[in-house]
Image 1 (cartoon, one colour):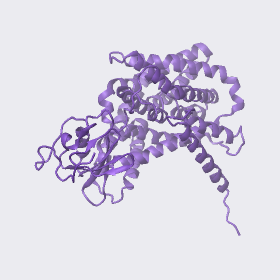
Image 2 (cartoon, helix red, strand yellow):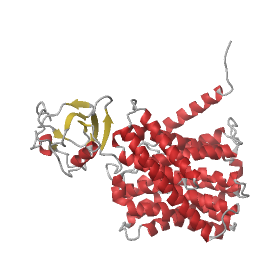
Image 3 (cartoon, one colour):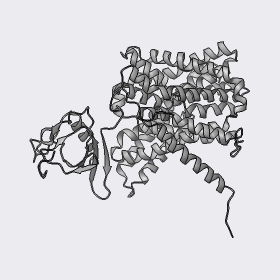
Image 4 (spheres, one colour):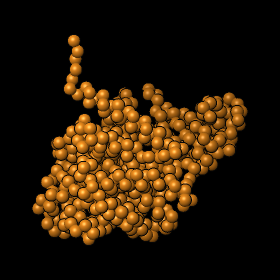
Length: 512
């Protein structure tokens, strides 16, 4: 006797393909790898192989379901984008980053749409939808490239802000154009009202829900650390649903809610970020698999020339123009502008948005989707594989990625103590100094140093080296992480009254 369900072979096939693709992608994306192929291409290829036009192992014929799954995946990606936008990023590049995520999207969409209309002789609505669908950069793809491409701090901060915040504008443009097609919007006044309600309403709802979520996460004790990321996900879902209910942009709301939680819940930051980074990566993988499944390779030859023209127009004209316009007055050197323009990878969001015209019954919906396939493919393949050589060629490579966190808090259950992990990078003033020289933050103790896979118990004479990982214990206060970060960056040391000279009483002895 045997129990077998129809879904069993599909689960086995999907898990095996995912297992192999993830391992291959991880190996190919390593900094030292000879062939740095972005993982997105592998997932895209898998979808094409097992889809209708390939082996036919998986068939998708419900376009509405595909669109809805894509929206859910997009929410996870947007929420994670908000969580990972740090206050330090905003201080470094708030204005140009926010301009690129708003004005830059509109400029990119407008130039792309104008070029499509002139070059391909399509109707204005189709041209506008193509421009809107491909206008935003992809947070997951950009962040993935940044992990292996050390960039100047301001450049990485600007890219993080832009790629995390620009998706809602592209969604708004796409939805607005489809509303025009369906007769719900007819003139500039309708568009102005739509934009205000979407952006302002979504921002206010996201801020309100985010503030409430911050209060709950900081003051309600759930007992199990694993529940905090789940609660944070619920806050993001509520923000989206509440905004959508009143006709505002749920995509703006979910990003703002994530930004609030990521900025003001430091004690749970690591567990929340780890959980949502995994969800966002899974959503990204799913969307690229989805694109591969929905694309029919047999249809591609007839749109190849048009699609390559759109891709070239976007990458070589529209994107650089948007970067130039949005960095005016910000004193961004041309080399940094070049990198910012080339790092604007397209990915998951165009995939989701390309399903909107198709499900809306637009005659050109199928062609738009096929063109988006080429845009994403060329962007990931060309820009993703050449970004690091370009950065090196322009002399902008930094040894340590500027987005890497200075310190992370690891709360200890049952006691009001945090274990803080701090990576001593070579740009911190702690390097090549003794502990007694640098002192210590108030109510904090350096309890161990991990160096070259060995654990050292530090003394006052212990020298700090680049690459060391310091483990500090500190009282579980909301400003504990900020104190440790300020100390690590040399922005001021506040010692306890029992240690006015910062000699760190209690260290057992010298150790180099």
